[in-house]
Length: 115
Image (cartoon, rainbow, N blue to C red; front, side):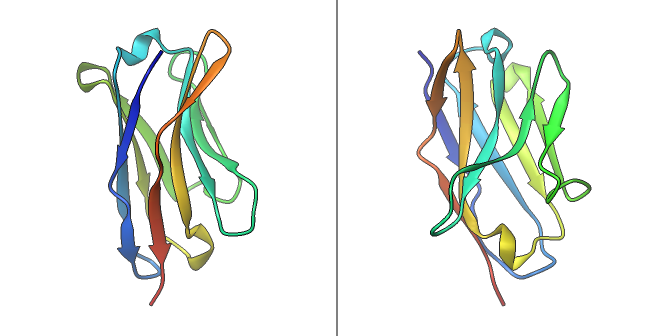
């Protein structure tokens, strides 16, 4: 089991930046996969960025070069730095952790990109 708590969402203007945080209830080195997904209104949940094996990363094409996933093992926290935000990035962002094939999700944090 793992509990995930996201924070850092909010309203930002196009071109702005936000950093999301996901605090895990257990050491993140013990979690097989960890990352971020998002769900926009009327759309399916989609992958944004994840850590795969070890510290390898995977990004959606739509965020490559703008978003960066990082982690702090000492704080059991994964981050998503989002730069050059666009209105299309508006969504609820969810933290995901996979442990022995089971997915765990945070409650989500809303990111709204609008002028």
